[in-house]
Image (cartoon, rainbow, N blue to C red; front, side, top):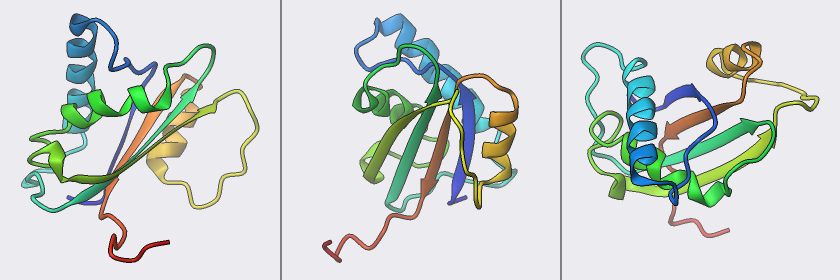
Length: 133
């Protein structure tokens, strides 16, 4: 199941949003992720790294505040527990700029073609954490 990649239309809901908004957002993320799960896939028990990129227009939440609701939404779908996430990278990029795209996945290109703000999420095997850099 790993690597696992999907996109969801934005904007993301911040960790500091009202609980009802966070619940709806987590449900939407879980539904988008579940739609990408292949038959027979089960959540991994291994450590994972997550990379979240928000392609946005206008105002946006802080990058650190969008991580936790997304991580929580993937419990039981991609991984068993979010304690397995040993690396989380979150960034935001304005969608109305110019891009040089090399090696982009079909998933990412499809999201760009829709011309709406979106979040791109990739869960992967983490780098070797015993190598300090």
